[in-house]
Image (cartoon, rainbow, N blue to C red; front, side, top):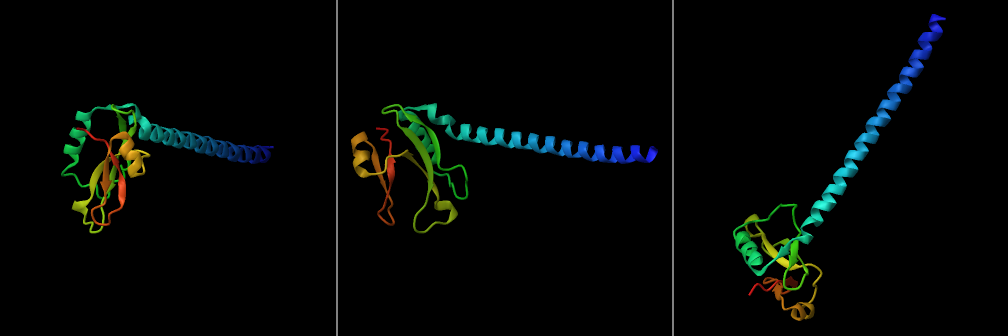
Length: 142
């Protein structure tokens, strides 16, 4: 009888261990999902931030001497421009010759992809000086 009890405790002990592992994995999965949801929310959080002309000027000025080289925070939406309610983003950009100090932040409208669209909303075309390609449309803070 004692031997049978030992076998049962081993068997049930193993089941309890497996259940604890499943609870741990389920808890870990929940924490990971909450983290992913937070990151998605955080990325889109600034879409409700209204940017005035002065805000745009201040951001341009603060980014002048900043190298965004090897920075995973870009592109990112920084808010909506008060003049037209369009989303504004910052991108990290460099063209042609790109040592770390030449990577810089550019402020652009999100989803404005042509010179024609940019002209319609009164933006400023950003053109790649090295290759002549269209980078995007920037808000006009003047």
